[in-house]
Image (cartoon, rainbow, N blue to C red):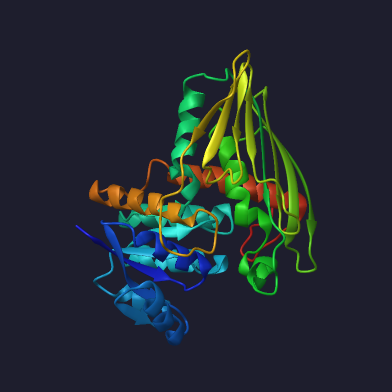
Length: 341
């Protein structure tokens, strides 16, 4: 079976997803929806597809659509995800799935109620060298993990990407890349939730985080330090440090093509795996690897699953719960957040 995808949105991430999907034998771009019909038509002319729609609702109502990819600005994720699930359409929603924990719980509850597939698009979890990192950790190659450090950031062009600086659109570096800087740590630590979180950050005049630094403690002896920024070019690497060695995930650590295993008393061992080859042009680094998550969705649907083991519903909730606490400490508030008390 070849799955028919419908993309909600025509921005850069949807462009990259369509380009990556073109390498699949299991799925095709069938429809594209935008609030501007001309934008959808232009998208199909460049990236392929059969139908262009001038509204998201029209796409969701199309009976020939198998999978909805939600690639709109983040404040629309919950609304569109719920509509698609209630229409029995499988959903791959760009990260973050929602702006806060309460909304994520509502989306997942809807997926379960409708027995329909839902996954947050954390493509990092499907990268070959992320899988290799997990294998090394599970084999005990570096002993017990004691510390994880991760960072990701770039000088953002707020003129061309204005929504990332607006609270009304769910902007900020933490929601943009926090799922990665935190996610790599969650692969390494034992506990689901930290016992302690300390975060600080810089906000713009719209109340959105421009940069955030957070330290977390898991259990009694595992520590995580993460940084993300929209105003500075950070190294973009991650290190997992254990009692017997460490793993260095080179830039870009969320989609790495090289990792280095350092075992105490031994020479460093490099593992390399290139991004999927493609003749397409992409907006973001290594975006050809979006193919990995698309194929994972295909596999899940063939098995009749409503969630993906690599990015389970519990994974999404685990991440957004920590993000909510960091946002609370830094002072970032979104419409729909629940205030304590």
